[in-house]
Amino acid sequence: MSDQGGHVMTILRTLLALMAVCALAGSAAAQTAAPAGAKVYIINLKDGARVKSPFLVQFGLTGMGVAPAGVEKPNTGHHHLLIDTSLTAEQMKGAIPADDTHKHFGAGQTETMVTLPKGKHTLQLVFADWSHIPYAPPVMSQPITVRVR
Ligand SMILES: [Cu+2]
Image (cartoon, helix red, strand yellow):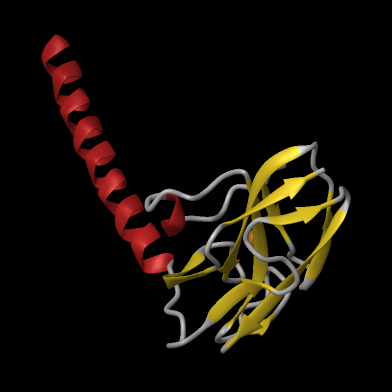
């Protein structure tokens, strides 16, 4: 019986290893290629801008189009605003998390009002496909710092 148990464990371990390989391959394949020259940028704020909260952030996009989340259409996607955070190389391969620091504009919005406490904050735009996965190469802005007074 213990022999059989060992055998089952070996099979399970092999299965788990295979699943991990598939998950990695799947996430790499899930990234959509961005057209050359595609860019996102914050239109109305420069690095170091002083703002009063709440403030407007406008999303600029060239070389691609905006479509709502869930709509799979070539060379389109939706905006994401990262506030006081960034995505690791590993995170860039999967769906962007959704929380207070990773905001999704899945209805196809091209601007938003941001409310932040006083002090220095960073803002960065990341453009991602219908399933919230960033493009490869990444279509994202340089992070900018704003000073909220
Ligand atoms: Cu999204």
